[in-house]
Image 1 (cartoon, rainbow, N blue to C red):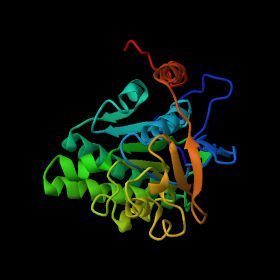
Image 2: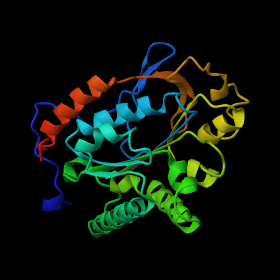
Image 3: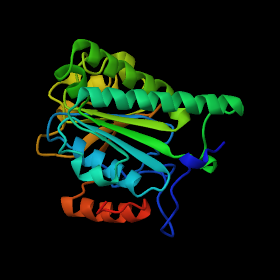
Length: 275
């Protein structure tokens, strides 16, 4: 199942990364690498400001930027958190709810098209050999689009579009990574949270906030992000499907390292930085 105008970009390095490969998130408390595979998964990240969310987002985006088989769709209400990656992003949305809704509708339409193609060839999901780009949709600060800007109708539509993409997008090669510094039930309702296969909770102010990310009851079992010390920036709990929360330290990229990754990514993607 291929579409010539949607084929992956020509590989320009000997061993480029792939979104089908594990992504290095960091190391756990035993010094072992934490390297989940995001393909066919979605990820929810929560925690108070300065707890480490941006570090993990940058690591994930860096891997995707260096991959030849993924398109980057970045949504950032603050603009500056993901703004460094704008050059390598296929879509970048700032603090404009109408632009955000337009792009989410476009992504939903692409998802529906892919499912029609899969149905036509009696397949359940896309695979690497199809030559079709995966789309990584990263939304930094979900609350900005669902509770801060726009009308109530626009906020509700944004929430519904995200829920649909998380619920149906995986097999069509659409991965959603959402982050919030306001892990509350009105921002991340259970009906949305439970659709995310992977979840990461950085430091939260309450046990209930930690449970809103990881799932109800984990705090009572001793897995609470409230107990992470404020000075332990980048320390969090990661929960994979069907497993136990695992305490880890997120990897960190400096601005200079991000610039170096972007420089390489521009070459891989065949993008002229002067254009």
